[in-house]
Amino acid sequence: MKRALPLFASLGLAGCAAVGPNYKAPELAPPAAYQGVAALASTPRTTVSDQQADLSRWWLQYRDPELQRLIERALKANLSLAEAASRIRQARYQEIVAGAPALPQVNADANASHQHISKNAFPPGFASLLGGGGGSSSGGSSGGSGGSSSSSAPAFALPGSGVSLYQLGFDASWEIDVFGGVRRAVEAARAGAEAAVWSQRDAEVSLAAEVASAYFALRADQRRTAVYQAEVARQQGLYTLIRDRRTVGAATQLDTERQTNQIANAQARLPDLSSDAEVQIHALGVLLGQAPEDLAAELAPAAPIPSPPPAIPAGLPSDLLARRPDVRQAERNLAAASARIGVATAELYPEITINGSADLVSTSLKTLLRWSSRQYSIAGAVNWPLLDGGEAHADIAIAREQYAQALAAYRNALLTALRDVEDALSRCAADQAQGQSLAQSLQSARNTQTIAQQQYSVGLVDYSDVLNAQAAVLSAQDQIAQNDAALSRDTASLYKALGGGWSSD
Image (cartoon, rainbow, N blue to C red; front, side, top):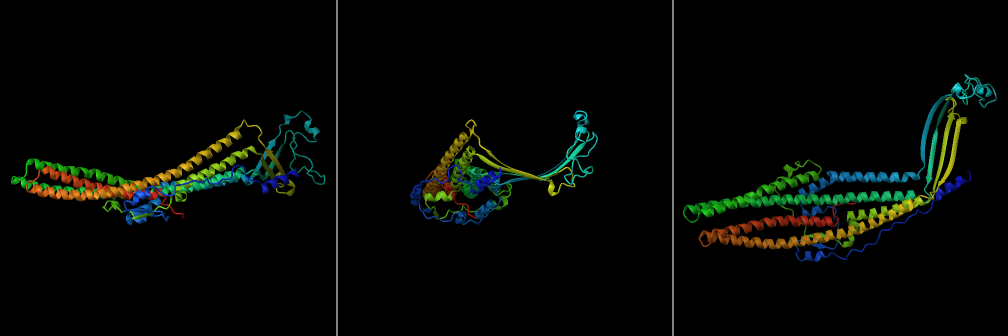
């Protein structure tokens, strides 16, 4: 055994290459450029460049102090982010758990026992054969010069007597990680912790976009409310004009009823807009980790819809591999899956363990701490499973399939990221094109309304022409408000798709 122990130690110190594959990130081939950039370039209200820039705080580009405050507060207080941070800490503790088997395990132990032997446990006369009486508690030699040991505790008990035993010491074991199973487990745990970090950053990206989206929707509701309130006031003024014309016979009862209906239609939209504005305020409150109604006083005053920045530095599709947190998370999950193949493969190889113990053992507390009470042992063991019904090989096959799944997920994450960017680019281009058309439509509708009112005032057209012109103006104003909010929201979605919203800090 003395010759074997140095062999075990040298194996533990020198080790060997860990079994299983050494991970290398697969090469992915994103397209050279975004296709949607060309469509957006034809509507130059907001442009996209292929220059990569810092998008960590993209919301500053909207130049809206309230939006900036809301997002910064959400990033500090959101409860989903707190949950993600806890998962990171949990994953880092898991690294310690995974690496623990490669380190010596030491336990301290202490015990005391007393055993009384029955007088009838042995045949009659057995005690006298051993040189003792049935009721005596005296034992053998104390190990000294051969003098009497009547005052010492017995080394063993005779029938009808008892013996006490005290023990204090340590035991240790060390499983030598010769084939790297523990190292692969640590590698997998570390990759899992890094994946948890990227998961948190992905949550930050989504959170910033959610806050911006809710804020834009709130400001759109407030702007549309102002449009309908102004329309109600204008319609009421027109009702007064029609009523006065009716008193002189220039208008009919039908005209006044139609105008009353116009006022009611405009007023009917206000409750829905007010309710939706409250819903957005409630959503923002929860995103900031507060009660839904806590932000009501702060956000109730109306404010303009923030305009999107004139240019977005999107960079190239290949930048998504480094910028998108969900893509980075998928790559780290792939690395963890690769390491777990090594963990499973290590089960095919022997486990080499060294066990040892060092104790102080005595039948008396007075002599327990003496050097002569020492007792120790050391042993080495090799455990090599030979027949397990194919379980180890099946575990390796399972780990390889999990790696294949993680690889597919990684590739899919990049494709999804590319799709998100292209979709956002398409929506932004459509919003800008629609905005230009709506601006022209509003100008035309206003001109038509002015002409219709002038002709109606002199009796050249029927009042239905005035109503149609009014409806066209109101519809165009409402659609422009919604389109402006959609453009700001879709621009924020583009920032999210590009992976903006997290910082390496």
